[in-house]
Image 1 (cartoon, rainbow, N blue to C red):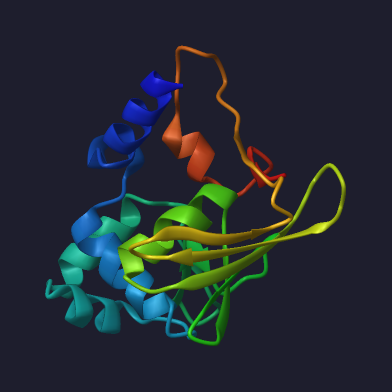
Image 2: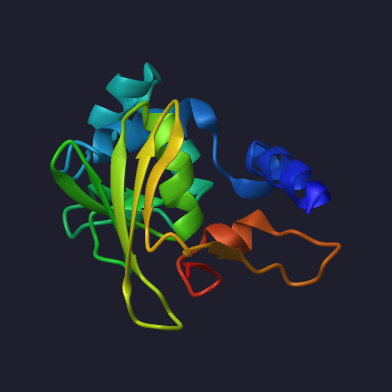
Length: 170
């Protein structure tokens, strides 16, 4: 497991592998957490970047979600319901996978409450995460996050960050 814990942060921080540029993704997450769709112009202003740079950055992440008016509604953190409910300061949002729920409070510098459903038992799982202290409560106490990799010697964070059944709270 130690190799996995080293590989995951390194690969998630590698823009060439994930398509995500932290300089752009963090301001976008902070705008989405406000609970409404985000225009490219709002995003550019928050990131302190020209609109064309933001459009280029978004093009590198084809799974970014948009509404019918072309506004951004999701990139890891989303306004569209998923199995992983993510509540920050009363705003009910969702994440693409269970791992996102554990990472985003630190990136957002905000506490969050998470509710997911165990894919094995169907029971709700509730987790509270503080951006500094980490996980502060888990119900049931036996809940775990499962991280499935295609092979033990290979970790593909692009695959893992896409919506789907690979990451669950159990």
